[in-house]
Image (cartoon, rainbow, N blue to C red; front, side, top):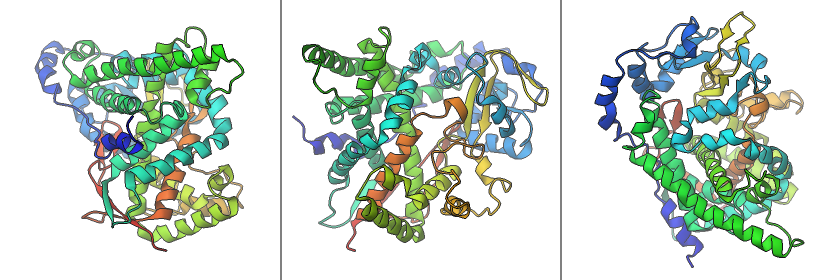
Length: 509
């Protein structure tokens, strides 16, 4: 049996790969086949375009200039509706979020929008259309019991510190930053979602990472092409093959675990059940949703959020901490005080880390995982307060990143102010709920309303614990250039520098 150290080995230098090498194979065919402009529901709305109106050209343009184009639209048409990607997406001002965020599914659908954004069945995401089992479990089982998950997260975090970073007793250790983040997040995520029996199973870790990397790669490639071409393209995109293979592997691993648990629980109904997300799904699923292959597939899909989004967010926040060492003494002081007064990691301690929480919110507001949020597909025509009618099937989104740079939103705007939100909270007498995981019109990274990210509280706690342990145990600096690493945009997503290395030195005081 492999040691825990062996399980971490494949993660030490992993890089997120965004394979675009297959695009060239199909470009000529697409140009020939797409001779006439296509239409969509957004076409009937009169609104200015950002970028070219040529849908084929602007899809490729948006791939590596998405942030630039979306931000330009926000600056130029901040209080207006405008179109990007040749009209594929209708970008609304945030002023409309308040009137839209609680509309029922019959009117606008968050699930359908996200499935479309992830390229549906072509990237393995269509299972989300079969029901909201995972959302219900996160909202009703995981979030209310986060306090019980904290010791499990801490246990896995301690192992990660030991096996990924080590004691640094023989001197500083240099590690690739994103790979280090991924090693911690993937292990903690597995502990919460699949439990003790699988969280250190190398096959499951490799399968979940393979799915995340290749599903994202497939998604980015397919977004460049018309819907009519996408099914054929999956036959020539290697990342698509690997995505399908990851789903098959997940069905084997999770399916076996589900059947084993059911057999054991049938033999001994009074035995204590595993305390994890998988068991919660097993206990609350319908007969259809509870089929082993369905549970396995849904579990894998959740890796996109629990591993990818959390890892990217954590890495961006961490890079801001390393690039701004002047914040570290005050953050450490808060960590040490709270740990002492609360007796270690627990729900109370995490809630009292207001300075760290403020830093996290500030960092993510300037380097969020995506520039576009509040994704919705219109199910029935919706009339906005200004009289605009959103037609059925309209694809709407909101720009979330530049909001944090608006003077109106941040009256004391500076390039970076890690304790901005802490001061605002303190000035309000501690009664203002402006935490990292709280959604509002100026904090839309997790969405807003009925379909705000259900796992955001878990992600917030995990990020605080990881950053806290790193700052308490190590001094950290970038290898080479000490300035903040430059992020790379892909479509609406922003990735941290995947190759930047960080030097860990054991703290002596």
